[in-house]
Image 1 (cartoon, rainbow, N blue to C red):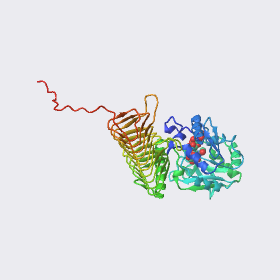
Image 2: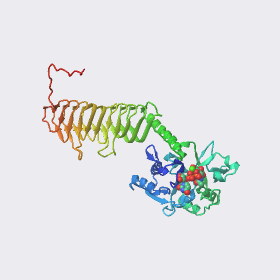
Image 3: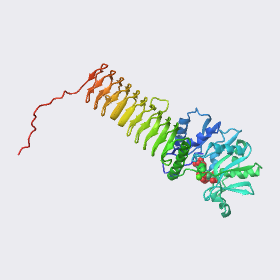
Image 4: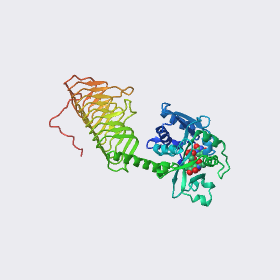
Length: 461
Ligand code: UD1
Ligand code: CA
């Protein structure tokens, strides 16, 4: 169910598209359905339907492991009415699991247990005890047997005292769901078609109703406001941090880590405070990440050190924009690696150095205040402080090739397209616009003039 407006989010964006740990709320739910090996996922959209459909279809690309269908609920007449919209596309056999697009942290193993409780022929409700059950549907039992779900607004004082509530998730046979949905009415306090009304029909039809009760409130927590979203984000990040630490990753502070995607770590990885990881990031064995780094879509090789305040912003995994940092490399502090930066082993990138769409071979160094764009840098090259490649002529970008063992002095401008021959040296302050031969010293700046015994002008009286 993803038709609701999410009024309290006070946002143009449909609620279920807000991001949690870098993924849309609804995407979390759909990904969990994929983990259950669902053969069909039907998303009920309403508010912002086109946007929700586009966001999801784009990402799953039809290549998912299930059929993804969308149905629209034009008017929101209740949860029962929402589920009625799926009937035209729902198959007759099998088990249906009903989930909410704004309850993102439900776990696949919990849903497996719910499906097991359904056993192909029962109505299984996911429930939880809340000290304060206000607002939720209450699980009404006679003895142990579940009799009904009573909504807050329809509940008597006695019923409101029940602490066991319906989470909004259930599993049941498709065949039964179809029959029961047809029997719903709107005779209740809110004039809505309550999905929860089907519990009474199950009881009347002699179908067993089972409550699968869990204790982890996080799994049933919904997002209705920016505050709730932020709270779930923290909880979700804490879950990730604890998982990483269980694998042996040393986090300086599990409360100061943000993973907005997938972070894979080898052995003996350590991560200082306030780092943000986005997209797909891999840290090989013995990698150290300093404080306040932002790292997106990158693979960091064994033993590499990313010093504090570095920004590594790679593009899509598998594309040329993904970033690679070789084993034993040193990056930062204050370094910036942009899409397509590929560092070989033992490369050093120092403070205020920007690298874009460039490869640096083993042992190359650019330690201070430099820009390398569209450049191929050979082994052991030393790229001096303040030097840059001028890769853009105002209309097109061109490549610079710096062959192995070149030494580029400080404050040079290499105007692309350009090749600096192997083993060459470029004098500080040079502006090169022509290729240089291997082994040559190239100097391209005005010759120094020193006038002896120079008298400085004197101030007029
Ligand atoms: C519902 C349950 C309640 C349960 C609670 C758990 C009903 C009648 N009540 O209450 O027993 O304790 O969830 O959170 O089901 N939605 C639609 N179309 C609609 C109405 C709702 O798609 O016409 C979607 C909402 O966007 C949301 C979900 O269904 O994702 C639940 O709707 P909500 O209004 O939050 O249900 P509650 O009244 O809280
Ligand atoms: Ca709700």
